[in-house]
Each structure stands twice: as C-alpha cells, then as structure tokens.
Image: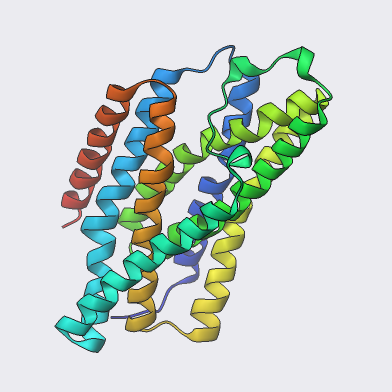
Length: 274
C-alpha cells in the first residue's frame, strides 16, 4: 500500500477538516437568526449523520484497516489487531467523554427558544458555556484526526464523513452559544467562542499529520491501527452522541428514518466508486 500524498490531497484533507470543525459556528448563527428550534430537521439530520458514520466505519474504514494489518501480520494476527484497534478507538473517545462533567457536556440539548433576556449576566451559565466550548474542543480533536485520515486515505469517503461531522457539530454550536449569550447578552461573544471551539478539529488534524506522517512514518501497521481506531471513534460518536441527541429533540422515528437514509446514501456513494 502506497502512502505518498500530493500537496493538493493534503490541502483538501485539511480543508474538509476545517469545514467540519467550524460548522459549530453555523449552529451558533442558527441560534440567533431562527426563532425556534426545528426539532424535526435536527432529528433527521443527526440520524442521517449517524447512519453515514456507522455505515462507512463498519463497511469501509474497518475493512481498510484490516487489509493493511493483514498485509503486515497475516490473517489471524491482522484481524485481531484490527478488532483491538477498533475497540481502542472506542475506549479513547469514551475516556475523553467520561472526563467531562455531565452538566458541561456539549451534547446536552439546548434549544434556540431557551434564550431569555432575564438570564443575562448569569455567571454560572457563563462558566457552563466556556466549559462547553472546552469540551467541544476536546471532542473535536479526535474527530479532526478521523476526518483528516479518511480524506488522505480515500477522498471518495471523506466528503460524506466531513458533512456528517459538520451536521453533528451544529447542535454543539448551539450548546455553546446559548449559555454564553445568557451570561453576557452579547451575540458576538457567543458566536465567536462557538466558532473558535471548532478550531480544535483542524488542529487535531495538524498534530496527527505531524506525529503520524512526519515523526512515526506511515506504514501498513500504523495505517491499520489508525483506521481501526478512527472506525471505533466514529461508531462511538454516533451511538453515544448523535442518536441520543436526536432522541432528546423528541423525534424518535425521524431519527431512525434519518439513520437509515444516511446508511443508504453512504452505501450508494460507495457503490458508485467501485
């Protein structure tokens, strides 16, 4: 397997990661220009993102990881390493999630209509907003690496992954901007902090690129372990964050319909590039 990438490919990978990360700003903007949360649309969108990420992780990325590891270590050992990498990715993102206090978790549902002038200057909410931004930054770090690695390995699967993660980041932008606006009364500050929290995604991609591609060097084993971990990270995000958030917006069937639609769209897009 070849691991040489053109400057154009690397720039595209960074561009997709930047797009996915900074979509937190879209959520913040929606919070200030819409009067009410469109729960049906959000539920469908989050379910769709989960479908894309679960399908591509288990059908495409996991298999690429296995192929790379089997090449270096044989069928049995390579398969074991793939499975261990997959669950290692799940463990990694689960530990990050566990370290963030639940009341500051960026995936707690916030609605646009929750913005209330009477809550302005509330220091507790200011703290919640800042910690939500920090929590999102921590979460976006491995997501940035996942998007970037997918874009380098196979651009055909990177775009739907970037779009899925971008949709996933929209409610996170609301989660930051609502309490910040509560606390300060400033839409500008709320938008800026929400927007900047998404920068952790391209930063994660940059650090991953420097560490893996420049320091360690990329070979079949590194690639396989990385991709196995990426698959685990994306499955965990889908099951622990996307689907529960869609459910919390109160549209159970829409979340499932979106999930199935996301899987179908991802399946068709992969078939078109066979």
